[in-house]
Length: 156
Image (cartoon, rainbow, N blue to C red; front, side, top):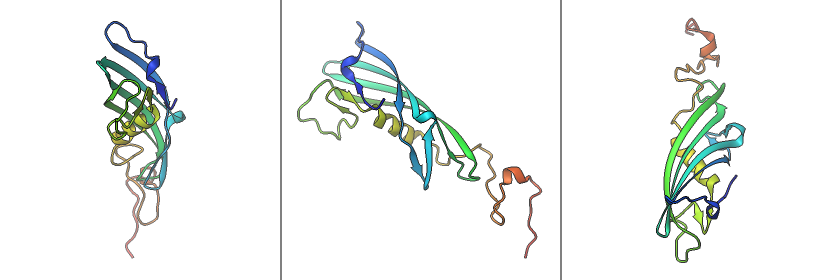
């Protein structure tokens, strides 16, 4: 799912609605490497509150990104949990700048773009296969995680 119609919300008497959505996530290109959401999808738990002529959208997304470790180049699986809140006018609104409501246009919520931005802002600075990854040997390129602590080179 890339877009979600806000008209389809099942509001109850409390003026809140909850929806769980599977969302397609486009790959991330970081440092020239591609990181993809596992299965190309992420799960979004969306809570929408209706207050007057505005919506408050609160989302929590969980995704696992898969791509190369930035130290040893083996496969890294990075779990990302991100949260965000947006507000938007309900329905068609004249004179509203897209910069004010970057994810909502009329009754349509661009969940794909919002989820991708949430994931992107929650990514760690370094994408590693594990926290204690030792990386590659700068002399011979061996994976130091597999080579062990005795891996050495004679000085020239």
